[in-house]
Length: 471
Ligand code: SF4
Image (cartoon, rainbow, N blue to C red; front, side):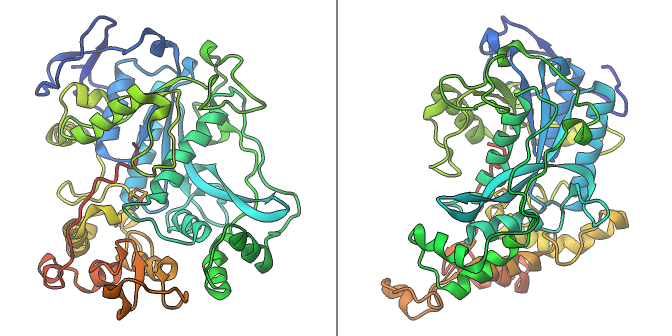
């Protein structure tokens, strides 16, 4: 196998138009595999790698790069959606992957973040969702374009929506990942050097208390004013506009490209991703062969195209022009193969393989047992990391941050003055947290009873669900 710039034993994928996709065989790293496009036109469309920041996406990315499947001239691009709730070691890994992708292979790799901006809708000041490009260096007053890692992006979402995500309403995945990628691609596919500015020019936030309340009432919201304004305070303190951003300032590999399949698709300086004349593109995700549920959903989505509704939120119709590939699953790469791949490299994601730290560190969908394991083993795991990669207190790599968000943005139904009709709930202090109403699980409980045995004693349900953030 060819050694590459710090990476060895990259699986070989030969692009073959005639290869038949068989049921995933056991992966053999010494074998040459065939990769084929499901439709001939996919080869000409821009390729988008949805990079989650984990080892599987890393293996997928370098397998594609080393086998020449990504081409910058076609408009191919790698996108990482930062939620500001990842572990510092994840950010370090993403940075290394970006550097190698851009310097050795010349393929642009962007860090993106959810961001709102102020605008007038129906005569009322409000905030609308969008995204911004960020640099791969940490945000500070002196580095205002850097990425956030202290929960600011996540909290902006909660404060804007004024409620928490739950397994039934995964607003975090929908807004911070699916929608951000979609918005970014609408700009990128326009083949222009920069994004447009969003928001007004007044030089200060224009939303006042009355406009927050009026907008809430307009949409039949019944939250009392004081609670509503408390929850809206954080988002009102965030930037009220999104500047125009030059792609080349955020990726050293971003150069003008021309893809004929995108020609004439732009409306203004954006390309629609749904509708009759939307942009078509091939998306690549790091699903493995042991994640068949995700793979099956992906295939159903490819088949249904615009008809498919996201499992994350039934109201979100995913881009109609997107066709998703999962090459690792196709060649039978499982979890153990991914670890074996990274063990051979000179660098790796410096987080313990046995603990599920991936994506948002304390994601509520990881289940009680996994969260308890992370909490119980965190100190030891952190000690093994270099100081600059250790989790900081009061950031999302600390469970107390999540407990704080739950208490601030959860819903105390009695305080809201709601009628409690459910007899079981009536005598309690009804509260809707990340685990729904009156669940035995909460981040406060987890922080207090941070062993698996202690959690069993309080009867916390182990409701692990796939977070499926890149789906
Ligand atoms: S990892 Fe979990 S908390 Fe983070 S965006 Fe995904 S579903 Fe939400």
